[in-house]
Image 1 (cartoon, helix red, strand yellow):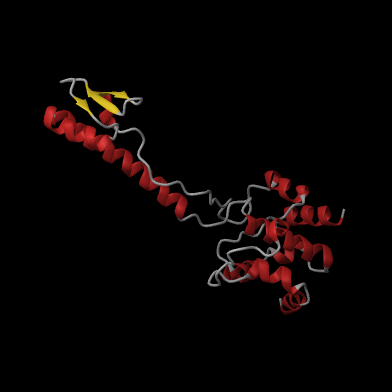
Image 2 (cartoon, rainbow, N blue to C red):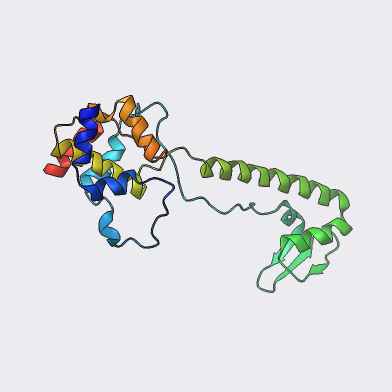
Length: 206
């Protein structure tokens, strides 16, 4: 293990700093190198689709863009006709015209016109809100970077460079000790399967 980490120190400082920078450091607001810092090797990027399913013990990571919590169309609109072009809503029960297409205003009228229906709408909307909250929480606390996340791609390319430019093997990079070292640097980085690292390495030198 000591020999492996000594070899790491001889690699390009620039590459290692980009891949193993601590999460506690603030990312620069602008990437001085621009788009060129991303992994642009199509063979490297496209290989993600062929990555074995037994990567690590926790599978693929997901960190998609987290959407703003938003309830689907409120249940209140079952009881109103919308006149979007006029900015109005018409109650199906009393035909009162509400000068708004806002669900809150529609609910306010329904509470007076049909209290029982209003209670049902509140329950239905709360259920919808709960579903969105659970989904948002699940996305927000993803364990790993998404496979096409810039940091994960940069990390993967760096591993390929290590294997292609030194005597360190892909298997050595996949040991538990090395995985723990990477995890300490950035817990959201995921070490690819050794066969994937070897493919990436060949793609870099071809």
